[in-house]
View (cartoon, rainbow, N blue to C red):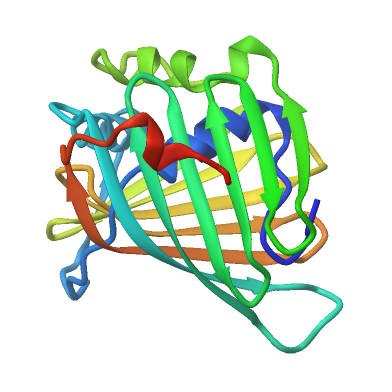
Length: 215
């Protein structure tokens, strides 16, 4: 897998990380005094952002800071999503690639090399499970995670801390209190840091199968 365009995610977070990638970024200043939230309150605010959404498309910017390099690797691209479980991400530069997740079937395509990589995921890590979890009011927390949440006015911060010693050390999610994501920051145990922002998001545009093709 191309290290410049795809970040590693431990099994307990693969589906969750993809779901978190399915929302949009809006630019709003965060100057209000922080108000602590319970983890359940933070997840419930996020869940509400899915209400009534059938699909969306957005542009993204990804900044990757590798622990072995001083220079950040910046990529641009776009994402598309359609219920119940189809997600597409295309990176334009500097290393073009396309990723397609259909339920628990993950495929990565590198146009320059005409190369495909298929990565089957366990059924419980597919999108269907996580949307089922987020389709109902949140009453319990996912196992194996610690969560912290707070609000700055209409802006919320959700920190997810896996309990394992491999893979992700911390995942920070910045979003509006209606659930719309501003930024996703992933810090890995090896020191790598990945920051993804979303912009120009359009919801419920009627995406079709042809808009999720890898080639």
